[in-house]
Amino acid sequence: MTAQQIIEALGSLAAVFEAEEEVLRDIPGIGAERAALLTQDLRRVSADEELERASKTGVQVITWDDETYPALLKEIADPPLVLYVAGDVKALDTPCIAIVGTRHPTVYGRETARRFAYQLGVAGYTITSGLAEGIDTEAHIGALKAKGKTVAVLGGALDCLYPKSNTKLAREIATSGGAVVSEYAFGRQPDRQTFPMRNRIVSGLSRGVLVVEAPSNSGTLITAGQGMDQNRSVMAIPGRIDSAASQGCHKLLKEGARLVTSPEEVIDEVQDLFIGKSARIATELRKPVKKMESKEEKKPAPVLTAEERAIMVVVEEGGTPIDVIIRQTALPAGRVNALLVSLQIKRLMKLMPGGIVMRAS
Image (cartoon, rainbow, N blue to C red):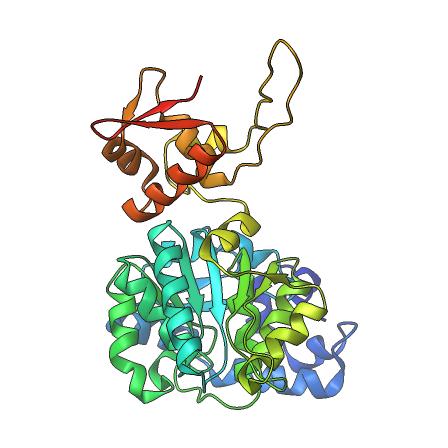
């Protein structure tokens, strides 16, 4: 029995908060024990007091019925009834990619998480994670370094932030266009039950889940499993075969997770690179590549990545300066130069004097 099913059984979210224990007990799938626990939790919280406290602290409270409730999260089997949001609630409804992993990463894991988050942030994605020490922290920092958005989902209430060492980071996330989120009422301390529960929100907000480093018994695998259950793209970065920190990643790869070694592969997996870019580029990215033909024979179409196709779109017939390509695709200069080399190898582009790029005849 999920929260959504309880709402449907009682008719509205308001009816859930007003329901007596006997009414909850009679709903199929709840039973006496769960009805008692649910009633206890509902009675512990005063809606008026919660809203007053939220208002005083600048926290926005949104319910499952509100228009601002993130659409993707609403699709999961057990969406939270209420979200407490510090920061910009709109960040929850942007294209998100979750980056998660162990609290005790190697240097390789830290650097990889920060680099992937940075480059995905530059590409326009919001990075979601759990604000825990280790990979989560590096993911949030990488997104902030890119001047991008990041969302931190807590395992306790907003006023019971854990770990305390990330208080400054949480404040920076909330004031930089991102959000710090919890489903728990003020005063709820995190525990062994709340952390696994918050993982469904991390994956639920995201189009894909990327696991950077995780031991074989890591709680991160719960997030990956929930991502699979929610029909999200689950990806993992391989590590050394003798590294305990990567055994969970290797387990996921054996079970069918997508092996990725670059942010570009993550973007290709979630199939939505140019969020917020021009409609023309976005439209062209979804079109199949036209086959190149000669009078003698038909040649197979070259295999192009989404980024290469975007460059093909912006290069005009008479040639286009490299700086214009960088500006219109919003890709880093170094990445554009690398892609142009690839397109030259595929005989689709020519680099002319003066930094002009032309289509190959």
